[in-house]
Image 1 (spheres, one colour):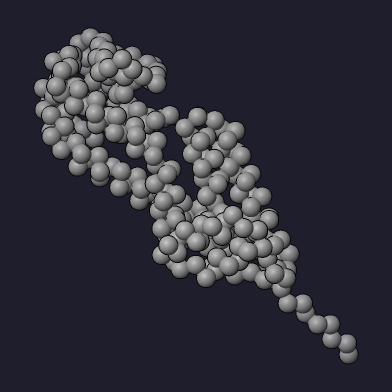
Image 2 (cartoon, one colour):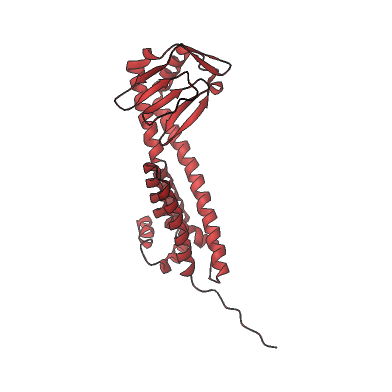
Length: 253
């Protein structure tokens, strides 16, 4: 397969990287798509767990949801409640705005907003955005039932949306880095073309992306910094291994 051959070129000497200029664009975009999918894996796994736990909530624990009502985009709760979905994850209803979400909390209902676990972070949803759907306990139960009935459809939509956003973000990142490499190459008088840089950078960014993924999974900011260091070193190595540009002849009068 031609795509596999393009990947093999990544393991050759950097002086061979300019040969990426003959790589067809479909392989370039395929590689960006694969890298994008790799980067959304942690969030995808998290949303799959949310989907599975949603079924557990509907089947076994839905009656445990405490009574509440939404008034002026704020939740008025009858009592604090923690619903355990399994040995590791739970849903929390709290009257405290200062309540801190922990790793084992899947969803936290606070007075001002809802926090949904997003791997090492969380997503906030205001009650105002749900005001036409959820106003009290009964509405929430019906809403959860509706979502659960089509949970795999919603899951696929979320994953596709994440993939699209990551694809655009990664493409923009590669474009900016390619422009930086192209300008630096011109500065040191190397033979350079922007599209050659874009194609080279698409494959060279593979290792930094894997290091970045490891940093996200391990919540290690040092690995994220290392990822950028690898990118900078990669740009310098590629630039200095490009063919020399044409020298201007000195004309004596």
